[in-house]
Image (cartoon, rainbow, N blue to C red; front, side, top):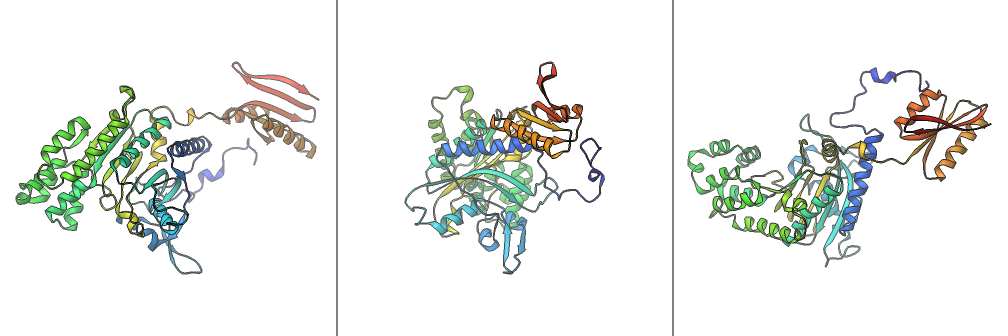
Length: 439
């Protein structure tokens, strides 16, 4: 079937839909994905984060050591043919990097320095809801070996620099500390079911629901009042912190609040000298009731949001407990940028696929199927490529169709090859103009 023959019959065929949560990328979307990935990795490398790659498949029992309970349930597992061992497709990159470090600790990786790694990887999880993607596409960083607040501040500053460098103009970065919710629930001696319910209510900012779940007796205690107060402790840094010091006073989470304040102080020092309109602090908000990642993160929690995008563009935070599960008891922090969410955010801000510049293209059309004509067409395409242009051969289309194809592919040159010779066409402000003819 030629390009002029009509629509693809598979478009009407039943049973060819993709599995839930997966998607294709057509050329414009893939070019944007590729440009974002290379740009983000370049930003990370300029901050000293060295690129690494991890395998798409791991032994499940090894990978599961570093997964949250939700990610363990959602892992795509199967029995490996031949060995009979239970393996899993990559559901999270961070445990893989820690596993990699454990295997090379003291050898290729020195044990007396801070390590910085960056990566670009696909992760696969079984969707738990209709909205969830089965495939995730991430570019991220891990910083292992530094427990100073400056390390967490570096994560926030780097995430901000990476999103700005990717072209996202409007976004905010939410900071939390998972130890606040954990500490209050530990003091409350809540059951596992109660903890899960309270975390879900906190995520929805449902103060009434939190107090109802606690019951009249416990809701009136200082711990109960503090838990209910977390629902209102979100917003600009300057507004939330003073209220948080009052609401959370005397309930045993002073250390966690001080750690978060120390990170903010470091960010303030890093922000000195930047214009007010472009300041890092202007993008920061606090959400002290944030309880997602409860069983994974140990300290500061970072999330990035873009207007019109329902999912976080950035997810990350401190996870000091995870490396010890692999025999490398080192403090660690990191984050990942969700490329799908970032792309949607760029589209919302008018900087999607249309903003990606493509190398000028040259379409060579051959009307004659003779080997000599095809060879000539390929020689012309090769010559165009040596001049730095994209070039390809399209057989069997009319000149009118060739113009349509060229415009769709971003080509501004057409060479038409037939038995009479070649004809050049160039696309200018007034449309396609005929140029040189060669017998």
